[in-house]
Each structure stands twice: as C-alpha cells, then as structure tokens.
Image (cartoon, rainbow, N blue to C red; front, side):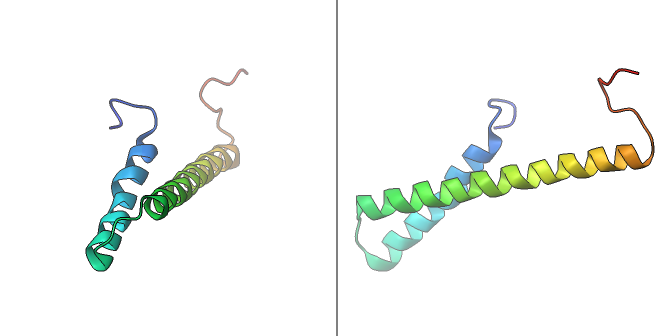
Length: 78
C-alpha cells in the first residue's frame, strides 16, 4: 500500500484490527454491528495514533543526531 497511498498505517490499522472483529464473531457466534463498528473505529484510531507518534519520535531522533554531529539537515540553508 505504500506505493498506492500516502497513509500505509491506515491500511495497516484496517487489516490488523479487522482480526479482532473476526475473532469476536468466531468466539461469540453473533454479529453486533454497533459493537464491531466501535471496535474497528477505536482500534483503528489507536493504530493511527501509535504509528504516527512512533514516526514523529524517529524524525526527532534523526534531527537530534544531525545536530549532535553538526551536520546540515537536507533542504536547510547555510
């Protein structure tokens, strides 16, 4: 999905968290659309937040490393 969309973590959240819904239906043998929608939205939101926060931490570490080594960041003037 990285080559198709700029939001690969959105697809990751849908694909991975859909397993929760499938497992719930397999265990309980009932389909509750309100519950399954709430599960999908909640877990998808958590995945988006967690992945984006991790990505931001990586960017911050890279910038800190560049500053420690007194290197110019790509695209910076000077």
